[in-house]
Image (cartoon, rainbow, N blue to C red; front, side, top):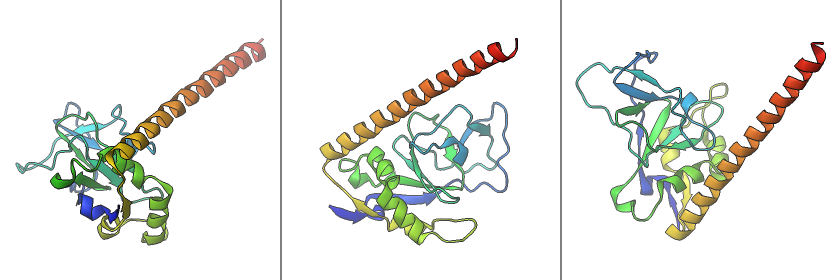
Length: 193
């Protein structure tokens, strides 16, 4: 079934921080920034900063199954929110894509994330991006992203295949890094004599 992203999900801007996000050691709020999102569609929590938010209004906390879409910069990609602390928000450099309640039994959030990162969607973003030096994707452009909605079984298969590919990439990268460390140690040993 062919549709548009806005028929499947609601799209909101990230948390409206004013200016630079000041890190606060042992802060109450975790913040996902673009540097924490990986092109594989994962969010790397190791270096996420914590901060405190002014005011008493409750922010729009991230939920498992949300998809974060990078709106500005040379690469516009998405990352899936999974297992983040409950008091986590995203920076304004993201759009927050959240499934509509009526679509929860028809679409996997991981499938949305996967499809937004694939070549057809990426070509669409390149063709509709604004700006020459600092490229950005407007909310309406993201909402109108063409979207193919196969069966849940097909979605599960594609998501599983993608996750296997990501694991393989990590294993191969570790092998490459290990080999380079081995060669560096040999070079140091040999050339230090």
